[in-house]
Image (cartoon, rainbow, N blue to C red):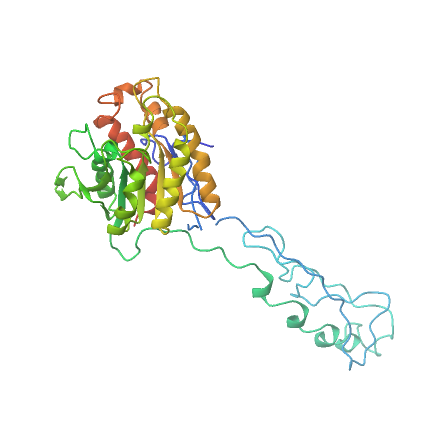
Length: 373
């Protein structure tokens, strides 16, 4: 996948890729991965539709015309007639048949013009209505010529000025463990939305983090569970998400999960568990955008993070192809881009420190900013 830093925001960490159905959420691409999106999204297409073409009927004289058309020179369209030009899609550089086709001179065969005539008298050729059928009989109306317009771009957030509801979903990294504020990446992510005047709030049944931020109330809600796995053991996220979405219907879900499955390597079947969890989420909240993370690194080299992350793009792409609203972000690449010694961004070899959480916040924000109200 094509990966790169958003040229419009050079201060942002890399790591955003988008998978999208129909059209891109934004045409930007980021270094760590390519934009994958979304949709059944929304949404949203820039590709030009191919022009439709049709056979053009030959021009024939009207049954009641008293003029016999030339047998040596075919009839030609009147100025402005476009029956010989196929319609083109908007933005095409082809001709549109708007009078640019020259009109052939009148036939010189047949009866000579009356005495005193210059040869251009109107009686020398039949009127336009006798030369060819009316325009509406030559081709279908415009609505039958052009394909329908693309659907509108997918917009998961409210358009009535109310706050976009974001659900942070995952394990203790989502909860914010080891951050100085207790809010993890959610603190810096909310600060960025405030600075850019995006009305957002966090939803969930957990509450961690500061009560206020920069003089504003901080939405402490989240669905982060310390020690949660994807779908193994008693503390699995798969057993929590149905109740989470029954309690709150988010517009955007930020999913970061898998760390607790990978300490000793990549367990058999764990990528299938992630795919099933994503399916569970998109079934519960089909109109929400789900942003799936390739997770943050672990300090130990003997773990399955790299192999797990490598499998996630295909899992996301398969569901995007089926019409699901998904984006992909690469937290591991964002960490590596910020500091080759990724352990310097971890508080304890597992959880990010404040600097690491700030990188996560920037990576999430790069992915969703264009979709926020």
